[in-house]
Length: 472
Image 1 (cartoon, rainbow, N blue to C red):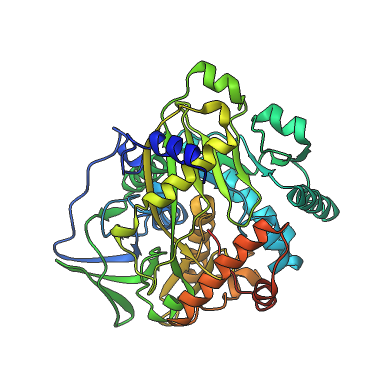
Image 2 (tube, rainbow, N blue to C red):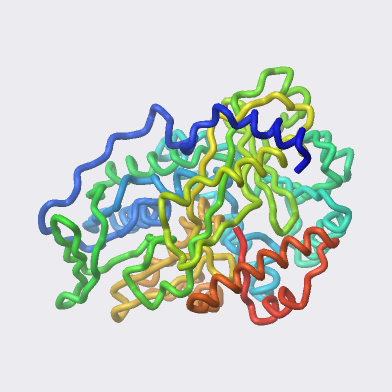
């Protein structure tokens, strides 16, 4: 980073508050009391993020008489569900390319289920009056290097061949800059209907309210400490009480699973984001962005960015930090060296916004698995179900995962449970120090590929062949 660029980037961060912008909203609900007794229920949901909240709400939609309890270790939406970029995608496979590489024979079905899932989220936003700033404006994947232009054309051609190009539009340099003006943009692929922008914390808080109104009993500041079989059901111990349930759904994602054998499939990766102050009318005019799409660049180490309801720009991604041992720790929530790097990249993308300042800077852990998209399963003879590994694309896919968990707990064969994606598992990560070394080599190799026209070295080619990956 040049000294002048570094100084300008540092100055832009001088007033940034080290807290997630979304969670500072004045509409944040108060915390609910912790569990202090023994509860019995039909279904216990562990985790108050999107995964758990959708599971509890859909369980009541399927059977309003079902007795449902949800417990959360802190407060609903405090972790990844309240810290993400607010990109709610139809994709269940972490994008078209990843789905094509892993499940080519059922990609059409996966795309159809993903579209239906996003439609259902949009319908739920309206039906439950979820005031989460939902805007179905789509997303543009932008190319910032010549090789990425070729990749976008290849992805579009493959989608068109499979009959999956409806709603996709290729944009040349002038067309993409007419949508959002950056001198770094060379081309774009606009998915007009497959992604919605929203306020992530408000979605979690709205789902919490909808669950309560449906009759779900929610206990916050109630971590699950242990899971054991109890007669024909399951027992979960908490700090001040316990719960006996016929069935249990685990939506703990990045946090260590109560089913220990699941833990090796997930590693916590820390992702970071900046939020600008609101843009003036002149600043907005300098970049366009009238259609309010989400954007993401096409590099391996990619940025994601979007505009908020009050015309701020969220700018995140690029660094994906794994700490030796895979600990989830609050001390990792902030990383000034990453904030500085992100700020410099922001002004390289939008030089016309020089002088704009960042109001917030934060990070958080993502539940990453080696295939980049969620996996599912059961334990304790089908009495416990889990979904995890959403790898940063869980705002929409967690609702699908909730339906899968409920299907599995019911012992039902459905179009979801028949999927190879649902029936198979990713490759587990190796134990330390192999995990740390392997992830480090992979990150270095991805950075090298970005610098060398996208060419993947022997390490990445070997990882591709065995189905192992690392991504944010």
